[in-house]
Amino acid sequence: MYEIDNVLRPYAWGSTTAIAGLLGRPESGGPEAELWIGAHPDSPSVATRPDGTAAPLNELIAEDPGHHLGEASVAAFGPRLPFLTKVLAAAKPLSLQVHPSLEQARTGFARENAEGVAADAAHRNYRDDNHKPEMIFALTPFDALCGFRKPAKSRDVFLHLAGCLELSGSGVPAVLSEVIDDLAQSGEHDALRSAFERLIAGGDGVTEATKRVVDALAAGAPMAPYQPELSTVLSLNSEYPGDPGVLISLLLNRLSLEPGEAVYLPAGNVHAYLHGLGVEVMASSDNVLRGGLTPKFVDVPELLNTVIFESVGVPMLRAEVSELGQELYRPPFREFQLQRIEVVPGGAPVPLAQSGAAVVIVTSGSVYLDSPKGDLQLDHGRSAFLPAADAPVNVHPVSGSADTAVAFAVTTALEA
Image (cartoon, rainbow, N blue to C red; front, side, top):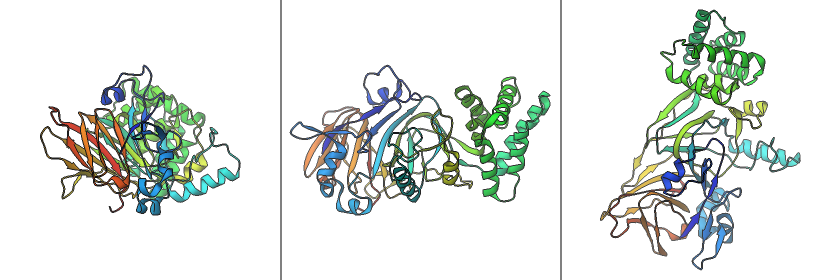
C-alpha cells in the first residue's frame, strides 16, 4: 500500500474553503476546485514507496500493471488505472457539458491527432481516447442540472415566462415563441433537439431574450410554481450574462442532493454542477464537450453529435449494503464503484470492497488499513493507493481513538 499526495486544481469556480475544511488542512488563499486522486497523466497522484522515494502513480503502475491493477483489470481496460476520483468543490456553476461515448472518444481523439491538433490546444475536443461516465456523492447540499426533462414540462416554464413578459408590456421575443413551438412537437427527440439547437446557436436573439426574461424576473415577475428553475436562471445570468446556457437550463432537470445522496451521469447526458462539495468518480478521462456557461471553446456541431436527446428521470444512485456490511454505490459502469466506510471507536473492522486496484481517502478521523502484504495508518485528509495484489484489506478504527472515522474507497466494478 502506498500513501499518496494528490494534485489540487484551482479553477476559478472552486470554493476557497470547502476542500481545505473537509481535509483539515490550511486554505491556499485561492479557489480550490478539484482534488485529483488517481493516475490520469495530466495530474497524477504521487506515491511514496516504502524506501521513501516518490513516483507519479501512473509511472508506478506502469512498472508492473498486473501486480498493481490485477490481470482482470488489465484485460478489460488496458494497463492504466480505469477510474479517476476527485473531491469537487463548486462555489460557482461549472460549464454546461456532455461527455462522449467510448466509440466517440476513440474516433474523435484519432481524428484530432491525424489533423495535427496540439494536445493542449484550446479548441481541442478530445484530450484522450476514453469515455467519461461519472457519478457524484454529495458531502454537502449539492445543486446541479442533469439531463433533459419531458418537453411538455419545459414548455410550461417557457409559457409561464411568455405570460410574464406579456404582462410586463415588453412583448415575447421571437426566439421564445419558437422554442415554445419546438417543444410542442410530437416526437420527443425532435422537440428537445430543435429547442436545444435553437438556444445553443446563441446570437443577438438569444442574448436579448435572456436579458428581457432576467429583467422581468428581477422586477418582480412571479416565479411560482417554478421558483427553483427561475432562480437558477437569475443566478446563472449573474455569472454568464446572456449565455445560451441560461435559458437551456430550463430544458434540464434541476436537482438538489442532500448529503449522502448520489447521482450518476452516462455519456450523452447534458449536465452542469452548480454548487456544493462532493466526491466525484469517473472513468479516467478528461474529455468534456462544453455547451455554455463558460469562456472556453464550444464546438456546437460536435456537441450536437454527442448529446442524447431524450428525457430522463434524475438517475439517482442508492446505496447497496453487501452481505459483509459494505455500503456501496454502484453505477452501471464497469470502471468504478464507490464505498463509503464508517468505523467507530472499538468497533469491528469494515472489509474493503476491492476488485483490482483501489484508492482510499479519509474525510474524518483516522483509519488503519490491514492487508496480508502490510499495514498503513491514514489520518484525516490523507489518501492511499492499494494495489490489487494487496487484497484483501480491512479498515479498522485506530487504537485509542475516540472519534468515528469516515473514508471513501474506489475500485472497479469487475468481479473480484
